[in-house]
Length: 531
Figure 1 (tube, one colour):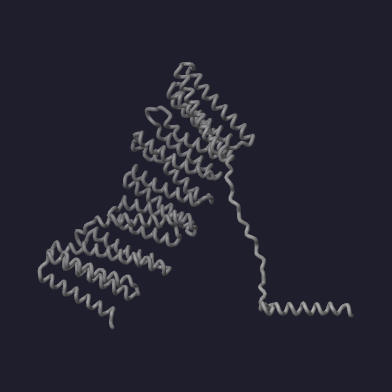
Figure 2 (cartoon, rainbow, N blue to C red):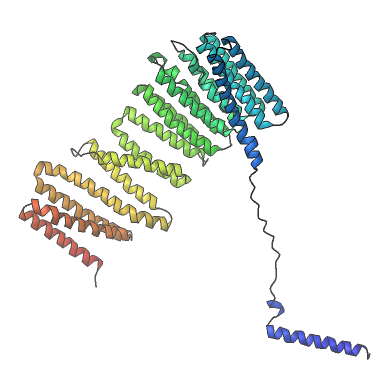
């Protein structure tokens, strides 16, 4: 007991010390913070650039295969200039070099040197085509049919290698070379059906490979180079009227294939949608350029129906549906232009508003841009119109434009209060400017019949009424911008009267204008300030 007593005293002493420390720190068990374990934040390290892979696998092979092809061409030219080799030997060397590249490339692919092997195999395709071109054009060893058949065989070989090795590089080389095969054949009378069928089939096959193996660059290249080939063909070839439909066939095949692609393929739909929209624009240009108005209107009507059906099937798709709407509206605009050009402005205004609606619903920047472009085209067009009579197309255009502009500003302001304020700050003054410009044009109709005094009185009266309406509108809907814009219109009207009208109108008119404007100003002041 005596030994435990000092121990008990020490325990009591320590407990007392702990109590004193807790009192000093004011810490109680309920105040002790609970420490929760947190997951350590693992920062992902940025991938360092693999310079060896970039330089020796991605840059050097394609660069130096091009250098090698150029060297072969210069070598053949050198031996040709010095007369060392005959034409047959030069052609044979071209085929031997191509075959060697193919064999060496396949061997490299088997050794798992993928990039180098693909570049070697791909480099054989243009050498084969250039050798065939030399046989046909330079040395006249083959005729048009056999040369075309050989070139088609080389492109088929490139297509086979692209498919077998899933090589985008071989596909790009084969596509670029393939679209220009018809231009390498010397022929006094181009075979338009063969050209159209060949280009359509070539594009469809390489597009299928690009979509199947997700070769994005091959996809873009095949689309662009078909358009280039058609531009060159139409530029250098005199196409008879009876062959117009056949000559333009690749355009329709391309458009249809791209549409099927975006409907069936789920990968990179955004990029497909952009390309499809671009092709819709080029298709519209081609149709307008090649066909008569009635033929073009029929085609645009069919295209509108097709995109309408696609929209019905994919109306809930936030990527496909907006593009289908955009393309359908382009077709509708061209349809109106071909058959009812007097209503083109109404079509432009309507399309602009539909684009705005699509932008608000799907939040797509493309439709916001399209809405702005179509609206500003309409703006410049309508401002170039002079209203000649009360019942005219010009008057209808102005009324529709002003009405849609006003509703468009209201539609833009719906939603968040921040957007509403921003739209009101810019939209209300802009709409007032549009209205005043329209009323100025309309008042000129009175001046033409009743004289300049009547025109001045009418214009000022209309402006004053407009100012009152803006202020009443602002008061009714608690819109401060309406009040200030209305007052601004009154000041502009007063400035116009002082600076311009007093110099040309009679004293009676001056008196009437100042009295009316003064009374209106006093009444408005009384309405807004009653103290």
